[in-house]
Length: 182
Image (cartoon, rainbow, N blue to C red; front, side, top):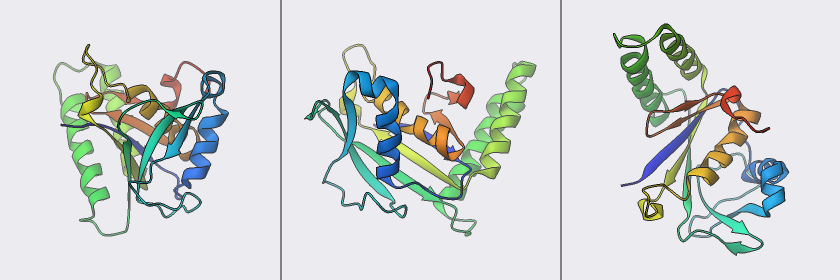
């Protein structure tokens, strides 16, 4: 079973993969550690186009692939059809947020306010970028080795595309939640 991380974005334009790679390469941590993303040819994609729907990424360290499997990335856009996958996903997360944050009798006022903020953001989103982390990347301690690189990839969408990040374990990340500079 795979683990998913998603960025719900409010910008109207999906960036090209080359733009995202450029943003990630500019991050201090990536530069200092010599880390970069590269496309895996198992999925054909034009890296200069903003019309991409799926890609497979590799994490490279000084030109060598670091992890065994690729990170699969999908973009689901609001195509205007209320039954498209994007709308289904947004509605699912609105319902989940209402249940976990707004209507939960144990939720604090702070959680309820966060839930309202999440729902407002979801309703304004234009597309969602999903990263599928392969279960084969689960290490001996039960951590996903792809978690940090996937979160770094999605942080680009937070900084440049009005995104917030959601993880399969129910965490939401807003721009201010990232401690180090984007």
